[in-house]
Length: 185
Image 1 (tube, rainbow, N blue to C red):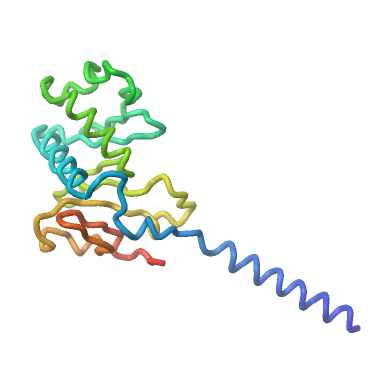
Image 2 (tube, rainbow, N blue to C red; image 1 turned 180 degrees about the vertical axis):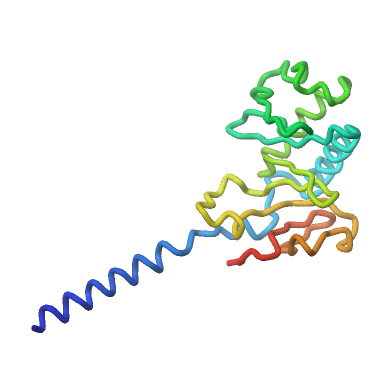
């Protein structure tokens, strides 16, 4: 009889351990603080320059994604096109970058590479602002809304849409943002 009680207790403890250990994903402090390879000023200047290039596109507002050093462009028709490897010295000549003025294509590629090196490998235009996904290199599992972070450039906090997000960190004009409903740990 005593063995059955001990067995039930051990089973209960194992089940409790499994439930609690599987529920929380490690969330490194880097995800909730702005930490870059380069200086805040250089990242801020690069985001401002990139925003300027992308804003010039008029109706063809494009976003980009870098995955495993490959650049993808999401055009206004919702097509995702692979442009090529960021290490390709002739990447700026790719026809898929037609929406960027030819004189700015090299700069665009350099900015994409620089931002990617500083953990900003994805850009989206949301709520009249360009937002850069931050630290997508850290595993997020199924809890992406809680762990997804964005960096936005704003001259004033009032420019941030608090209907969509909340501020986790700020350095100069760079804001680290999370979804308004995200659980932060």
